[in-house]
Length: 247
Ligand code: 13P
View 1 (cartoon, rainbow, N blue to C red):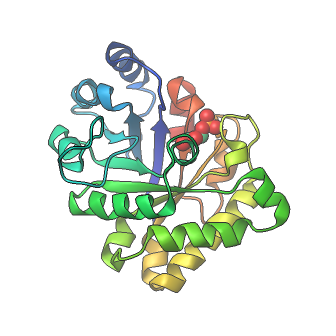
View 2: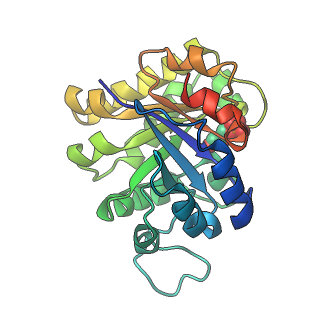
View 3: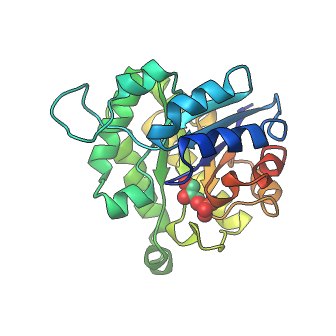
């Protein structure tokens, strides 16, 4: 039985003091022992967020990190820096990073390997554009993204990974994939993991859906057999997030 994981992706929202205020506002709403709850927050908010969630059921994640240990990479954040602060998860390869910051499947793979080296759980994002969906290549595209993201990742590491299926056309648009569409792709991702590794690994890995998930549609999406959680943008900044955790 896979443990559910509901993660907020705050994106570029909330100053450190606003982050603390939101964490305190959500504190009682997100209590649920059966679910892993994660807030992936802007890097600058991490120290305050770790402090504000101490002693609660919430873990803190980062939204990105670099794949080198240290050195002349102005503006980047190293995995050891995140680990030192108590960060447990990191989003890797969000479609916004791919679109605006030129991330590729290859850099995603390097970051995934680095995250595992530092015992930080990667939340590996994949997803198709509207054009790709209309061209009928969704599963082919995602298969390629997953195969590259998992190059040289061992089965033991893959078992601990989280994959987020986020159709790009559903992000921030209010247009959610139907539960059947989301299930079809999440099952497809699990089949690719089975093909790369084995059934035990495919059975263990957790797959989230992301893209306009909210308090109204979460229960239906989360009822699907291959959807083990959600990666939530807009609705993670509101009390609604507690309803998603408890859905
Ligand atoms: P929205 O929930 O705002 O559509 O964002 C989804 C997302 O990109 C989470 O990573």
